[in-house]
Image (tube, rainbow, N blue to C red; front, side, top):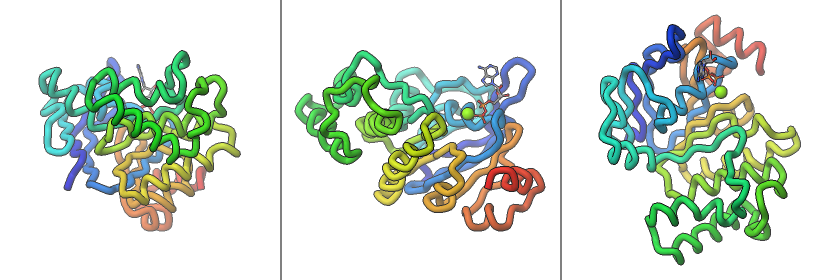
Amino acid sequence: MAIIEVSNLKKSYGKLDVLKQITFDVNKNDVVAVIGPSGSGKSTMLRSLIHLEEINGGSVRVTGDYLVKDGVYSKAQEVKKITSKMGMVFQHFNLFPHLTVKENLEIAPKMLKTESISAIQQRSAELLKKIGLSDRATAYPANLSGGQKQRVAIARALMMNPEILLFDEPTSALDPELTGEVLQVMKDLAEEQMTMIVVTHEMGFAKEVANRVMFMDNGEIIESGHPEDLFNNPQFERTKAFLNRNL
Ligand code: ADP
Ligand code: MG
């Protein structure tokens, strides 16, 4: 079953075409790694899926419902319903600095009143346990390491029971010794069949965890395939050149 269907997605900033007719599907339980040079449009593509960017043409469907169809967005209420099926994890964590770890997890479901307070509290306790931070529930983000902050950001995204998680370079802001703990949480999620799109420079993670790798360059998906095929036998010169620089 397709969780996300993107067709002919176009995005420009003025005269700059940042995304040029992007088309791809993500199926349930897929882990898609998106790789490509800086400025190739990876973040813009990801942000478009969750309506943090307005696109200029094409369609995005999430679990069958149109977020945008042929460049026309669905009604605000529908857009809200659709984007709530997706969770996003950013490079710079984007935690609320004035809220504790537990409060960061609980604020969105409490505001949206999707569940009872006790169900929300039970879920945040479970997720803190899952990421190994039960003992930091009352800490503020400023008192956590980067790796801990990113684990909290992942747990916060999971609080809304998303159909799919989107990650934009989740380990790029971390000291090298802290990337492992974040990648491990993501690996655990993949093993639990979470559907994920991960923009990443971690080629090891892409090889080991993803079932599909998409290479983007200059606003286009140049090629996409199983990690073993794409890494060992890239079909296009641009892919080969990128991999030569980054593997
Ligand atoms: P990536 O994530 O692959 O590094 P981005 O999606 O961030 O690439 O950016 C793609 C292109 O769009 C780049 O040329 C970037 O400069 C441009 N861009 C991104 N955001 C904006 C913006 N808000 N205004 C103008 N240009 C932008
Ligand atoms: Mg980016």
